[in-house]
Image 1 (cartoon, rainbow, N blue to C red):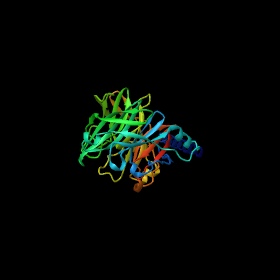
Image 2 (tube, helix red, strand yellow; image 1 turned 90 degrees about the vertical axis):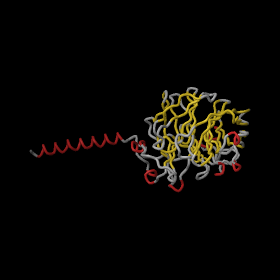
Image 3 (cartoon, rainbow, N blue to C red; image 1 turned 90 degrees about the horizontal axis):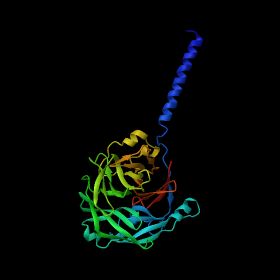
Image 4 (cartoon, rainbow, N blue to C red; image 1 turned 45 degrees about the vertical axis):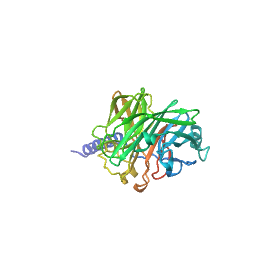
Length: 340
């Protein structure tokens, strides 16, 4: 083979190698290796304290309601106070027009809740639909048995009071025997209330979303696609039946998750690669009798470290991204997360 032929052959090999590299780069271009930085929003009015223990968050019109696990706060009671922030104030803060947001209060009335629900262990999710409000609570008779309840209530006046009648409730049975796990996500789709269980991965042999009509009459449940780690809240469902859930894992959890298919498929960000903590948003989709994980890559948050895992307990859509909030671990934190 002469010199020109050798050079030609080497050139062909180089082009093939370059093409393979470009193809591989294209194939992995959707990998969410760049984690999303969060913009912290300072809280006040009592919501900033870890003792507030924010457990749920939802929009009521143009007001963001942050519901403590125990609205009675230190007394551990169902009746008490929730926190409210105006949408306009949040927009102004993100636009750099305010240095902080004002946090108001709304009275939560749930007289007799602790008596009606044995082992009442606080609120976990909330959803507003006009003057109607729905919420889930947990009840623990002992450490090994956790039962959920779906409640119906009403908004009085111009969000002056949120009133729950404990007699208007539906039972949400546990889906495994882990204890201290319940229904932390609640969505409304096609006039169906869907309560989504906290653990839907290897530790749950048959994950389901329990379905109810607005009168809390049970409907056929929906199958939920396997998803590792805890599901701790959900955004509103859009016109295409899609919504996002906060998906969290604390390394000190008493149970171990299985292999995460989403991590296997999309990879990890820098901080997730060095930590055992998982903090992310995952998009789900409702189609007839099933809730599936979409093809959209998960949104990974920039982690601090395993000693400062943040238990995100609430999520709503907001201005091209999301607002998320933690409970008492490590403190009350409200943050804005942009879509990548």
